Figure 1 (cartoon, rainbow, N blue to C red):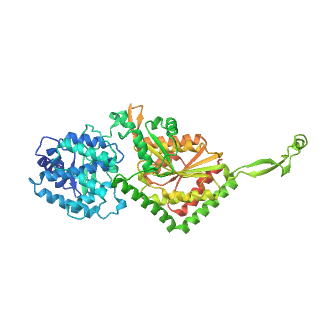
Figure 2: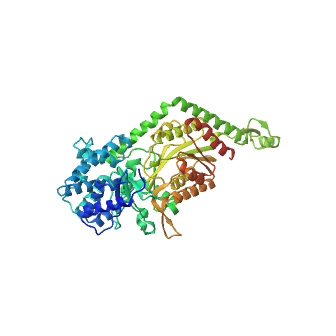
Figure 3: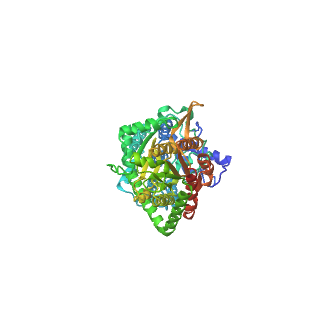
Length: 572
């Protein structure tokens, strides 16, 4: 795609927008171009029509109200899909050519994106595909849930701005349990239809961004900064606390803690950078839940498919994986024998201690012998913490396989092992326990690892540290499998600037590094198996220092992880 738009095409885009709006008295805040840099007739016209037929500030306020939701890109794109449908219907009598432009765009969109696998689609893409097929008179191939949503979403041209806004708010509450609050601030162009992965792209710094089949141009959006009110920092949805906890239980599994225990844990852990956050600890046990709509059904289906792929990927290379496990077992056992210090045990057998013989004669104490024994692996416990955020999508099979191999090797070495995953959603950090220390026969549960939402790494490490401190073992080790890209919707108060910082990039990395160092100060060794891209290696070094490594293939697992564990056992 071209990255340079000529002044001529910028002027042409403005003229297309003004012409459709029948108003030359405003400055368009964004413009659309084809991939070759030519002003896009269809989408510039649609934007102009939004100014012509609706009260633009009302639409802008609604979009701003959605901006900080977990799936903001999905909801915003769905709204634009409905707007496009209504605007074409309103204008087609005056501009018959607009219907033809819409059909040609639908054909081109299906050609570009219609062939993707269902599991690769975001929910909006799934509905947009059906919307395009409907425009072309093709079968929509939707479940009854999704067909009902699409019918309601394709807004009637008879709705005025207020009615349309209220209808969208009703749909969000009915289908997604989101109560949208209108916020008066101008509309930004990341809120656009047919925008693949809108949430990631809206964070970019360039003025030109991918849009549909081409490009959109606009200033970098303001992320709120110090203008963001405190209540929006703490809550990203207006669902009540009890409703949110019920949602977490339905989506991730029943809480393993009673409400009063959760409150006490949050009081201790959700402080400082994590003020306003909440915790949900679960073993993934299903709660009483019902599928409200196709959005939820789609997620459930894809999670089940991912779990099946995790297992299939491991078994497809089972011989190779078993060899890696055996080699890792050998390395761990050698490390225990080499580096764990021997200690003295007194008893009724071994080498006689002459100075204690009197105890047998006067105190009837038979423990007058001593023997030297090596410390055994039972003095060590290991917790494996898996980053289960959306950024790990595409690596789930390899990460679950690596985690299984590590856990299986530790199990064979009789080292107590616990495996947990973490992600965050709507201000909640979810920690799921796949298998606990005593569950030696349940490593297979690790393949239930799927990705969801964001990741508040610092709070996850802080929570894991709290759980690990309860271990009965003298020596404790935490192994984190992560791409070291912390990101969450709940912001961090910036005391120096008297405002708020997004929990991502430097802020998230700095906080995670602090929590790792605090865990080490508690006597917990922390190491990282890095799962990310080259660009995030500096972040891994910042957070974990030298105690991290990267596994590019399962053949490297024994040497890489074995060395990390060996270094930690050496320091015990």
